Amino acid sequence: MRIAATADLHFTPQNYDRIREPLSHVRDDADVLVIAGDLTNYGKPEEMHSLLNALVRLRIPIVAVLGNHDYESGQEQELIRLMTTEGIKVLDGSSYERDSVGFAGTKGFLGGFGRGVLTAFGEREVKAFVQASIDETMKLERALSMMRSEKTVIVTHYAPVIDTVRGEPTEIWPYLGSSRLAEVIDRHGATIALHGHAHHGHPDGKTTAGVPVHNVALSLLMAQSPPCPYRTFEI
Ligand SMILES: [Fe+2]
Ligand SMILES: [Fe+2]
Image (cartoon, rainbow, N blue to C red; front, side, top):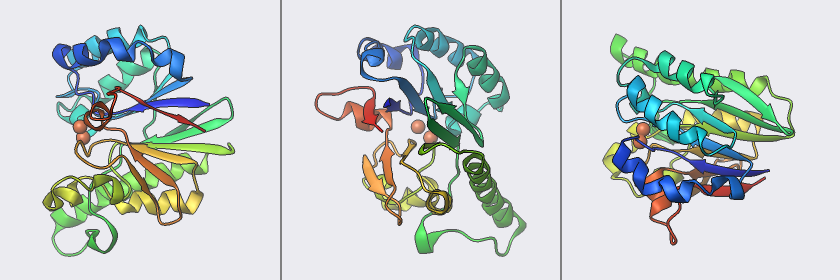
């Protein structure tokens, strides 16, 4: 299966005009398009309406997770409904199988990596924050435990490893992802893990157990030569 992946479209008509033409060819290059969150800028249904108008014209199956920007207006459930109505598979602690390839996804959360992972100690607010990170991890765990496919594609918005946030200022690394996600990935195994969010991170990394991780944030893809609004993986 050929998978085209992108993330962080942050839809505005101007943003989309930059990628409209090259994205229109995605169907020639791939069987499925993965969008790893931040489809909108402010999580407004109007933004999603406009983006969906453009996405349906691509005539390719789409698998997506939401990103933090898609939560900004508190209307994430409405966004999911709009996307689902257009036939997009929105993964939110859920999985989807197509042609013997399983897709498992969730938004994920922040919280840091390795020895720097924030733990649930002290103030109630810290515990609530850490719980949000654990909850997203559990959602991914649930999605993966439902799958029986031989090949697995993991989709999150936040980064599961530190490798693919390198390039961003070190001060903000803990806000870009959580290695709790990678622990789940390694426990279940996967063919590939795709994420966005770290707009100025690094395209490629690996989990401790060696699962390839790719940051497909649009800004990174457009910095490739030649620029292309998606990256294709054959699995
Ligand atoms: Fe983003
Ligand atoms: Fe984001």
